[in-house]
Image (cartoon, rainbow, N blue to C red; front, side, top):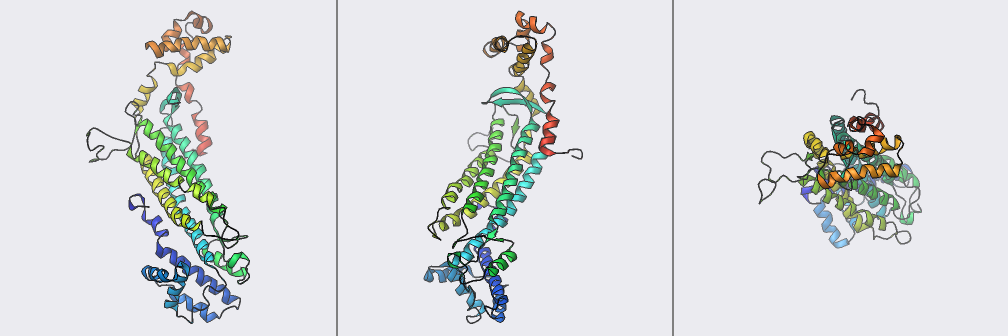
Length: 438
């Protein structure tokens, strides 16, 4: 990803320096295991660790690869330059390139996931704080973009919290699924390397041995991993889309923080645009762009081909770096989001009581009017509000059939907002658990 949408900690995971360091650790730990088994001399295994503080020369490895046309061989050649040709002759004993490449890739994905989990924790904390802050701040709920019934701004934040919490659970599962390693040799049979080597390397790197690999780790694991990133990205877009709608000039119930000196338009000085939310919508598309190629990587020829390789060299860094940036940006957006309770109430009252239509409908049915007739009575008065700008309660109080069913003084009782918020505490308890100390 370009620096504009990258954060240094995640970028560092995907740097050539980090990759070659992980490759080195795989090879060095494998040598230790081979020495433990008596396959190679102990002194040769110990000699490999002489490079433990070496900063591998990326340019030199690239130079070698330009000749060998093979990145792992280029690295091993460079490692021998530091360790010594004779001392390094048992490095990569019985291994194949995918043992290094696949195990390293999964180490990087695990490390990236740990950063993403921390990102999600920060986002969840921000969403919870804003949910509690606006728990009972009433606003209009919308279906199809049209006024429906009252909700609260706190419920909006709580809903997004619950969605992101599910995303975090999925990400934790994806981390466990991707945290495998393979050091099983050509076509995965362990013919030239003992399974104990794989177990030792995986233990040292915090991985679980792949139960059965071919010459590669099965790519259904990676498909599930990137699909999880795609779902989280879609949840980011879901929140961003809500904010974009709430910031529309005609709505303006919420607004991205507009800092001192910020400019909204090169042409129109009055503009304050939801640029962060729009940016997040675009970034979500980039993350999801990795999902289909990851799915297509599952089907490889026989025990191995490299059609997946070029894909993963791109989507591994790009998807994780982009999602890391997007989660951080969304957390800042939520943290500073400006809420306008007065505008929320103004919008709710824009159609003069129509939001209470269902409650009046239900009251009529409770009073003995058939549901079909109740619907007709309520709708004919509601349409006057839509079409003539009338007041809904006034129209109902002037409708003899409605008055006959509910009484002259019984209509207004069905217009209190508290009716719509009476179970907010129950919903919050379901989402957040015990809030006694919150």
